[in-house]
Amino acid sequence: MLKVGVPWWIDPEWFDRFPSGIEIERIEAAPARSIPVEFWIAPVLPRDAAQALPHLDGLKVVQSLYAGVDWLLQMLPPGLTLCDAQGLHNIPTAEWTVAAILAVLKHFPFYFDLQHAGDWRRRREADAHYRAMYPDAPPSLPPVLQEELSGKRVMIVGYGSIGRSIEERLLPFGVDIIRVARTGRDDVESISRLLDLLPLADIVVLIVPLTPETTGMIGERELAAMKQGALLVNAARGPVVRTDALLAALESRRIRAVVDVTDPEPLPQGHPLWTAPNLFITPHVAASSNMFLPRAIDFAAGQIARYIKGEPLVNIVTGHY
Ligand SMILES: NC(=O)c1ccc[n+]([C@@H]2O[C@H](COP(=O)([O-])OP(=O)(O)OC[C@H]3O[C@@H](n4cnc5c(N)ncnc54)[C@H](OP(=O)(O)O)[C@@H]3O)[C@@H](O)[C@H]2O)c1
Image 1 (cartoon, rainbow, N blue to C red):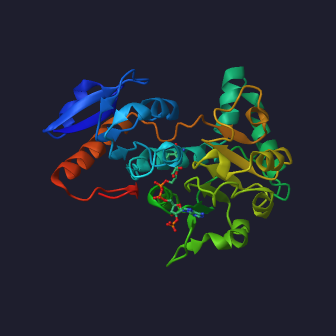
Image 2: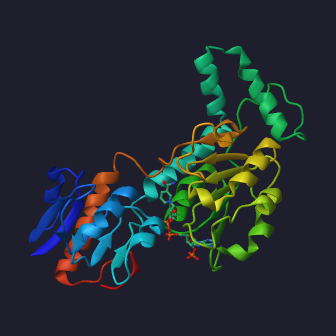
Image 3: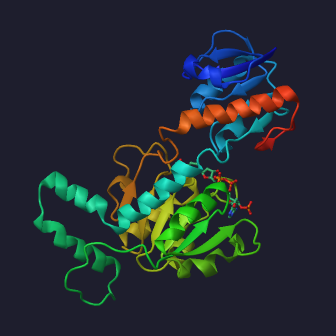
């Protein structure tokens, strides 16, 4: 009988979604004994995974519940099969991206501050913020109290599973899209053209995996190539953007940014990013919706069913099966 390890925090009430003919072992965060497990649904916290891994005996397949497996790949011994959860985060991460873009264009962070201050009249300051980013904008009455997404050109850097979902949700807003991936193909630009393309975009969305090539992909040169007042959206991983360069670009009022991920992460108290101008931060929450667990369990259940039947697994990152 196949022994499947699941993180301790998965409630047994979900187990009836798994195929029959398996033995489920709930793996504690720091097991005190060796546990026979052939197929492991890895925990989502790196520390939990690192503590459990040495205690798993006979392990062959590791199923991540995350699309990004950079952290997990680093800790696995060679010879194991690792599958990621590509596709599982498409909906929440794409929705976060649209919400984040609209929140900035509609100046929601500023208006939320006003709400807390109980101050309606200061809403006119939004116009001053707008003019600080766009010094060449013509004078306007009534003042500019929000901006429109319609008509903007959005560059999606990382036209994979989530990138396509972002595009699908942005198109109804009437935007132009520039798609960028590692390799160029029909209607998708190659990353080698990044510096030529950046000046064309009003909004630059990063949704690439963290790899040696993408680490520091957006630095001083790239930020300088962006349009004055353009919006950088990092839904990928913190180190894709160089923090020192981002801080300098924000402080000089060159660009605006909204980030779900930072470098370092967690962002320590007192870090200058917390108070950088024109920056809206969410603390790495984009993929973590209320629908995550049922979707993840169903996906893992499908993989276990394939494994039992000897069918090829999907989303293999390394190894075979
Ligand atoms: N903020 C969050 O909570 C959150 C949630 C989910 C995922 N993520 C991050 O988002 C990443 C993407 O997820 P996904 O499911 O969309 O992955 P995916 O389907 O594998 O797509 C990745 C895309 O990135 C492109 N890419 C890879 N290396 C590149 C490079 N050096 N330059 C330019 N483009 C490059 C790939 O290009 P090719 O098509 O040419 O291979 C592909 O289009 C994950 O790895 C994870 O780090 C973050």
